[in-house]
Structures are given as structure tokens and as C-alpha cells.
Length: 230
Image (cartoon, rainbow, N blue to C red; front, side, top):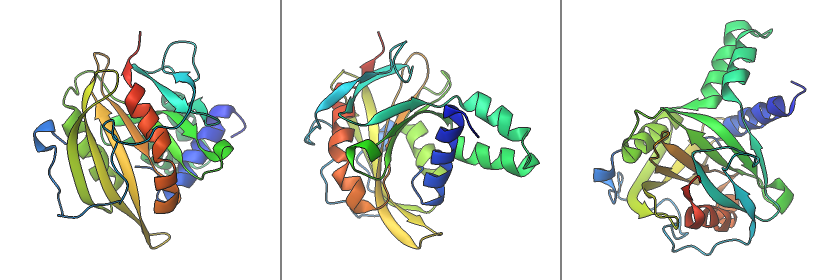
């Protein structure tokens, strides 16, 4: 794929193969396995935020989303046109297999990939991704549980209610993901909020737990500035 969108899909696919791609609010605070997935503190205003490199989400920004939030300095955001990519993949030389692969990496549970924020320009190996869903999915906690379950091989989930810096109520999950390909387990974090235009999930992956933890300040910045798009 030669387009910018195509390169984004390749990046998502590679991250999924490496284990990088990643629910009701009533269950917030429940630790499904009694364990803590990471020694890092969660967001919810508790993490130390990275320096801002600008805001995305509004029309005209690198990614148009139902919400807006700041991204860390030097991180690079790129929109993912999932509908177009899925259509192209289904007609590609891979036939049904190509379409199935694209569907697997561009959809997770009830949400679809919409934005990929790359940490490589800042010296890290990982992504903060934005996923969006349809307006009828109003339960942020339910959406998040489906998102985590759809990733597969996830364990030690810990859910909790959060309120973002922009006043959005949501649910956050910290959990461990085990890559069958690499035979390694690493920490991941995801946050879901509901908006009038549908749910939004922010997911922080990383090559391993060390990279994930190093990128937590960027995730904290996003959480502390997350608000409805204006």
C-alpha cells in the first residue's frame, strides 16, 4: 500500500502481530484476577503528564474525533480511514484473507480504528490509538470490556471509573496481554468514554511493559485533557 492510510494499516498490522493492538461501569474497580498488571499508577489525574505537542480531535486536526485531547510533544498523529481500508483490502490480491486480516486489525469489539499516534519520533516503540463506535453503544464500561475481550489472551484485568480532565466520565482498564507470537506478556492500558456521537476508546500499547510504562506520561496527558470536541 503506497498511501499514507496504507502505511497506517501496515503499522497497525505489525503492532497487532507483536501484541500491540488492543465492560460496564458498574464493574469499575473490579480486579478480574486479583492482580495488578503494572507498577505504574493509572491515569485519572494521578499520572505525571508529558509536555503537550498540540491538540487533536477537532475538525482540521490530524485526526477528527468526537473528542479532543493533547498529544505528547514529538508524537505523530495520523488518521485511519477504516472504511476505505477495509474496502480496499477486500478487493486486494489476498482476497477474503486480506479482508479478514484488515477487519481483525481495524475493528476490535464494537469499535473501529480511527487514529494512530506514533511514539517513534519521541524515541519510543509503541502507539496511542483512538477507536470510535456507533452512537447506540452508550455504555462506556461495556464497550471497554468488549474491546479487551476481543484482543484475546488478556488477563489480570482491572477496571475503574475515571473522570477525565475535560469532565468526561468513563472507565479505564489496565491488563496484561500475552503475545502467542513472541511468547511474552506485557502491560496495556485503555480508556473508554461515551459521547453523543458514540464511544471513544484510547488504547496505549507498546513493544513491552518497559516501553508501555515509559509512554504512560503521554497517556496521562491525553486523559487529563480529554473533552468533547467543540
